[in-house]
Length: 468
Image: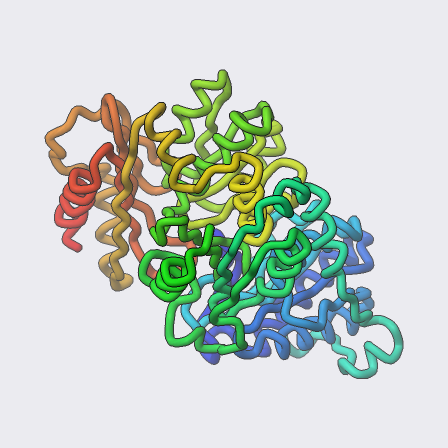
């Protein structure tokens, strides 16, 4: 079974992530492309185990089906691959990656025109085509033959991608500040691009965890408070202005501020939206998913703008940004994008923009965030994850989504949404959401309130109610 979640198809290596399934997916998409009259695709891959091999297996199938392949045959950030889809004006692109999932996973993300994540309508129809395909009917051209014949072309669009980011930044302001930046690629693929951008801006750059390690140092390749202890220590010991980390494929980021404190992705989104409105003079809406801070809503209201809420999945954020011409879109898991760049998550660009913010304002990250909370107050989020069996999932789904039962929270409820899981909006301040992860067998319960202790208490109350 090949099933696309919120971040593409992901599966355990050797279980469902196999050569046969990679070939089946590639064949189904290649045949669709031929039916649509499309003749080229771009393929890239990250540093995970079997990523390069899987990219080659996929390229062989596309070549065998008569589809030309632009192959980025080097470890490539997912945002670079998305940018390349846009740069070459292609209809489709593939990234072999499982993003921030544990090391035992790999997967494939499918991109459509403009470098956007494929939406659920597209992936659902592709799933049906994959299920109907037979391994015996797959055409294939040996990799070496495809390269020799020019059907598979090796490309390196890194310079174009880096230059596009440099053109969008106030490089003169950054050059004037002599900032010290610590980078943590988390054994992933962001080092070349982000280090090049910052060195060009005359920053003093230190890099940790830069080598390739398919086990990601035994850690989850997701930038969070637990996994970035090393970066926080480095920032503190060396007096860095900022620490920037990216997940395994560099589409998400984590940030450590000048006080060596971890900044939650919600805080990063708030900082950048406020910076674009207050300091750069931009105008436009914000887009967030339903599990992301409502502090964005307060900022938008102050500046006469709107903050739109969408389901979890960056494809929804991209679509809403296009519809509303919003200037920023993001999620509490660390992914965001800004108008004028690619229509997908880019931890490299977001990290560089934060460096610009420090340079142009002449203020530290902690000072700017204090300025925000002084005006708009604070929200704090409790995030809890729970694993479950297939039987328990059915029980939870029935209780929460079908019978629509809720505990007595002791707080007046304004409304409840079932747009994506269950989200409870409390009257006055705060909210709680419970939804199944689209990439892992987890139920995620998030709660945001003015105080963390209150948020954690409500999240635990929901978990106990569901028997978790």
